[in-house]
Length: 231
Image 1 (cartoon, helix red, strand yellow):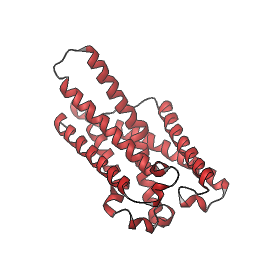
Image 2: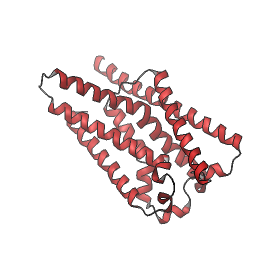
Image 3: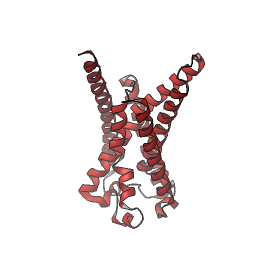
Image 4: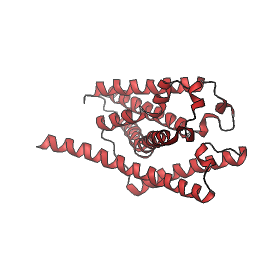
């Protein structure tokens, strides 16, 4: 795809995320007033990750356009660093965390929505905003993967980073329970301590598999593109 359409597409996605974030923060929901605020929810953290990621994408695209025809080596080095940051963030945060949020939310929602998104929330969060947080993340990130060849880090390093993020969030959830006596997700209220440990380990495993899935999809798409060029 051409550079200009990619720029427009990324800018539109960024504006979409900023709109969702602004509307979500404007919702007068009791959970926003309790310890941790919006930051206790992985959905909100993921929205911030996606907005920052697409912000970096837009910034790198604008920098590329502004540098077109320039021979400034220092600017080229800075652009290379920005693109490396973009690719790293796509690999270890935007794709695995985004896909995890979408799939886990809808699996639990279809099984028993009270475990993850109680009906009470319908009084605060409109349907379009719910889909903006839990549905459109998937097509947006797949569109980005299809339009840009992202360079993945080493698999061991990538998985280690993804696991560190997951472990950090699990500690955050446990700390919130320690302070408030309430679990962020109702599901955790109903299972034993041993089951909680298994659940947390499963979360780390699944998100690591999503990292590998992203690596495989990226490789498949762009190896196919190379094959078309040389066929």
